[in-house]
Amino acid sequence: MLMKLALTLASLVVVSACTAWKAERSPDQRGAASELKALLDEAVASGIPGISAAVATGDSVLWTGVAGKADLQTGAPVRPEMLFGIGSITKTFVAVVILQLTEEGRLDLNATAASLLGAAVDGIPNAEKATLAQLLNHTGGVRSWEDDPAWIHEGRGDRLEPARIWDKTATLPYIKGQAALAPPGEKFSYANTNFTLLGMVIEKVTGNQAVDEIHRRILTPLGLKDIHLEGFEPIPPGQLAHRYHWATPTFQEDAGVNAAFPEVRPGLIDASSSNLSVEWTAGGMVATARDLARYAAALRDGRLLKPASMKFMTEWSPAGEGEQVGHGLFRSAYPGDLAVIGHDGDVLGFTGSFYWVEGADVVVAVVSNVGSMHSTSAGTGSAAAGNVPGTAYLVAKDKRFIDLAMKVAATR
Figure (cartoon, rainbow, N blue to C red):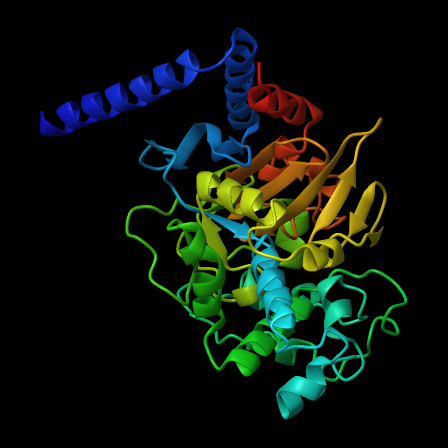
């Protein structure tokens, strides 16, 4: 009876909040919000377990929506305050801290990882040649530990110890002694290793834990209480969604299905007994869609970096068809004049995306409790993920979602 009363009161709060939102918006905006929610429902119908999204402007979060289940076994629904892994979106936080340290005169972006870290990076390909700037935009020719066949099995697959809390640099031995991919500056090659090295640089220069610097410099000043680095700080109990992963034939061949990850649907496994500590500063953060959108708006609006640093962060180079890479951010172009700037994430059990629309005051964040890494033959990214039923970034970067988010954010 008490549980039913609590649920009833919670429902009243949600209805009240939605009514207040609708009272302040035009009919077009209300209709667009309903259509955004329908796109989330469509994603769940396609197979995504659960999804959460937010649309913001520079002033505030205008809309949040959820759909699906946080726990498929119990049927618990996704709630707006739930945390989801954001994967490589973590890299943007690291880039901000690196650029802040540069602004303070404590770092030179022309320095190399080896010049700062010494013997700690011996044997890492190009660590003695690639500059910090090249690590930031993935042009250093450094191999990614994420692509190492042994790591794939031990970090996400059948040889993973799910409860293990990985040391910050335990991923580096997987690529020690291997050849570099290319000379520094020659080409774009995405590598998690770059941001493991940058995390190490933060700790070397500041003498503090990278997680503490992220809180001190970004999260605390912005009042963001629902973003955390899993494995390196406490996670609020009951707030983290269960995590699921597409166990496609490709995943089964390249990673193998862990015995601790039961199949909950054909081709979908429950990886909730794992954690993201293995990713550390390359992809280990969890967040709500709301706080992720607030962070993105603050970054876009220059509340974290000086204009020169923002200009540097958005100096674009080619990164594939329709994609450009900056120093910590990506730019995705659409037909016409439309482009979005942000970052996607994909790890064991989660996917995420945040961006702002270039030239418009609209910010989007979408997170989901399903991962697709190693599940497609082409790797990660919007195009490759077409081989799985769905991901957060496929939803977020659907042109329909972008157009509707712009309508929600439009003034009368």
